[in-house]
Length: 213
Image (tube, rainbow, N blue to C red; front, side, top):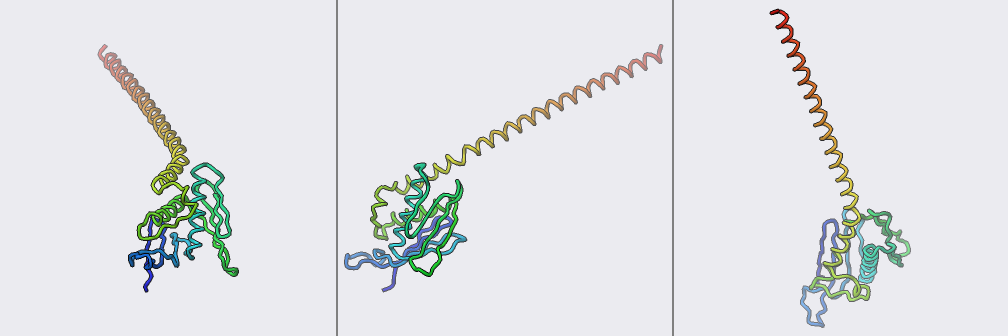
């Protein structure tokens, strides 16, 4: 029997799920209840793949880590398979440890947008009616898909927007000050030119009067 394949995409991330339906449970041949393999492709990053247990561990790691970010907790996660920690407000360090002894760990640094895209792909998997739900304890207390993504984006909004607004306000103030200064300088120059014209006109009038006297 040919295995089924489902792909969940979100911007820079693609999650591919490969598996078989459970025919003993009268499932459709298009369903995936037995996950045999999965692949997580992040743009410009090495391919991440494994079996169902690896997928569960990685989903657990990303959900718990991202939830700690939303709740303003210490953003760090460690397990036998994966470590995640925040390098700064913009980057997150991911260490994937292979279950094979001769394979070196995979080290990744991802930004906020990629982290959000990964979570979105996992949420698409959990929401799909073509894949049997991964009923794990860590998913029970996680926010629902829409609320979770909105919460995380709001968190990013809170971090980056206030400094941007401050900078924008400073630029507006500076532009207004420069404009006011230029207008004032222009008015002063215009007034000086008018005085010069009046003075020249007066000199011309006096010269004419002097010739006629």
